[in-house]
Image (cartoon, rainbow, N blue to C red; front, side, top):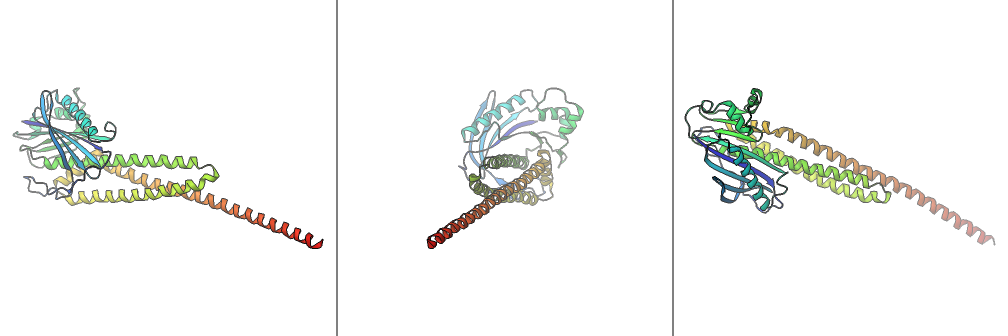
Length: 343
């Protein structure tokens, strides 16, 4: 039985220094059913270098997704996944990946990143359930040395798939366990990467919307002075235009992801990805972001209308006062002219 540990760390980069080339080609597999036909975003490989985390040797590969996402993928092959030192190796690999991403221009890697671990088991005979018991599988995914409660074990292993008699995929929140006798797991890795990529995109968009919400609140608060209202209204209208562009781009991105996953079809890979999205709660994130976009657009529009109406009301008062001043002035001139003619 051969074990492989793969750790993934994704983050946003400070500038789009790399332009990935587009979509991946068809994913090959020994399975007869269609898998992924060029629907998943294709990252560009930036660097691939050997790494040593004593006593293990592995490979660290840096990739870039359009438009500004970096991925560090560390791989350690030929290890025993159920040894006690695997959790330590995973933590060290994740720390090294975060360090390399920061050197490559990653932004706030410690806070705004997605980390995931994939444990691949190959070169074995028989059903995976007969090779490793449920408690050991759950403990590996949880990186937990304490005995887990049976209910926790059931929850951890609840998202699981079998296609052939001797393969198995178990998906958890921060790790997955993939069994395949021949190590045919490239398609599963792509789906797991896609799930983490979408989760990071939603988190980053949610952060940006929170920042815009604080911005409009500050504008409303600072616009108390009457003479500032016009300038604040103009600024809010500009911000509203930016939000509309962001909203349009976000909707287009959402529709693109849905279209891509639909193109996978109702095959094994599609059903697995549906469960990945459920475990990662991507539907909840998409719904929350959409509601925040709609709510923020309404707030911007209301604030812009408020300042516009307020300024228009003041303009009418100014116009009315100006007419009164003009009438008074004409009245004074008429009186003066009358007295001048009388004398």
